[in-house]
Image 1 (cartoon, helix red, strand yellow):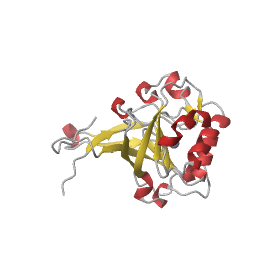
Image 2: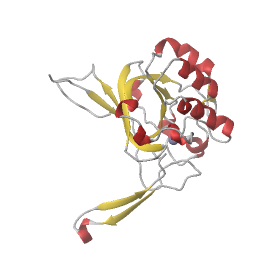
Image 3: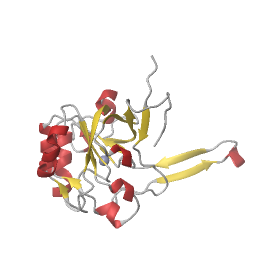
Image 4: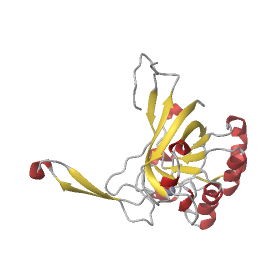
Length: 232
Ligand SMILES: [Zn+2]
């Protein structure tokens, strides 16, 4: 049976000196082999595991937590619900009270994607690197109560910048419960109409690591026309 699927790419690109966590070493892409000299092109890329669109797994915040290679593929795929938080101001928390209006949209087993609009601001700017809206501990608790499978966001991190009180709680709560997090998503405008879509973000298979770059994809199983598969 043929299945027609429209694919949306939700990934931010990784490139030399791309925006990243300010305390980590910058990403380096070194072009080591050239067709003109060597007969082929090949590159060496040096990057922190939390660069570009990437997964956080429990080992990121828990010494005994599971690593990327401990988790099966189905940990990183499932039905996703996209929640619109583009009204949130810079450097403000998404609290439990912000999530309450969406409570009836979130189902058990969902991957909840928080769209702040920050993905469109991606640059080495103060706004993108330090001032994104973030999920607070109370927000993480609500999602945990809803028994979600994972949480994604289109900002540099799910937690905020500037103090452990802003950065740690959501990571400790969600990763502590064995969930995964996907950060630095790029969310297309046409995923803002409350559709529920299949989603996956499969991390590259790095042994013993607490994070890994991933290609994040949303799959629209209802909207494809004439077998056409398109990228947005
Ligand atoms: Zn991360």
